[in-house]
Image 1 (cartoon, rainbow, N blue to C red):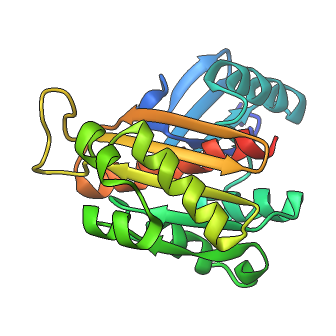
Image 2: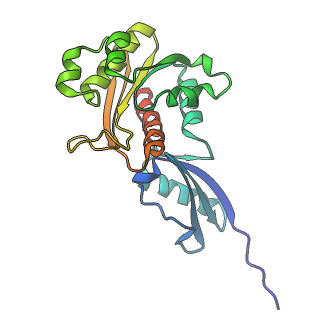
Length: 232
C-alpha cells in the first residue's frame, strides 16, 4: 500500500543583513517536520518555512523573528528598497540621502519604485572630501581629524542635508567598499551610517564582509534598519 506524505505548508519571509545571522546554507530541518530554506542575496535573504500546518508555520516564523531580530525579519518577500518605501509611506515621511561609498544606490533603490516621489526628496552623491565640503558644508577640520569614514562626518552630512533639503529625515552613508583603501583602524568593509529627523539621531558603524558590490548592498540594508529606528 502506497502512502503519500502530507503536503507541507510554505510561508515566506525576508531577512535583512543575513550575513550577520546564524542561518543555514541549505534546506534544514529545524524542528520535527519543520524545514527552513534560505535564498541569499547581497544584503538580504528570502526565508521559506515549510511546516505541517499554518499554525506551526506562523509559530516558527515568530520564533525566528525573535531570535534573529524583530526589525530584520518580515513576513513575505520584499527587498530593501521596497521595504524602505513602505516604511516611509506608512509614516508619511519624506526622506533625503547623502551617499559616498554607495554612490547613489539608496536613491536608486527608492526611485526604482513607482510613486516614490511622494516620499523621496532626492539625494546627493558626495564621493570626494571636496564634495562633502562644498555641497554639504562638512568642515575641513572634521575631515582632517576624523576622516571621511567616521561618525562625526556622517552625522554632519545627515544634519546639513536635512537643514538644506527640508526633508523630514535624512540618511548619510560613508565607507570603504574596497578592494583597496582600507587600513588597520578602518579595514575594507567599514561603513558608517547616520539617520536624522527633527527629534532623533541614530549613527552606527558596520564591518561588512565580501566584495565591493556586497559591501554596498549591505550598507543599503543597514540604512533601512537605521531609518526604521528613527521612524518607530
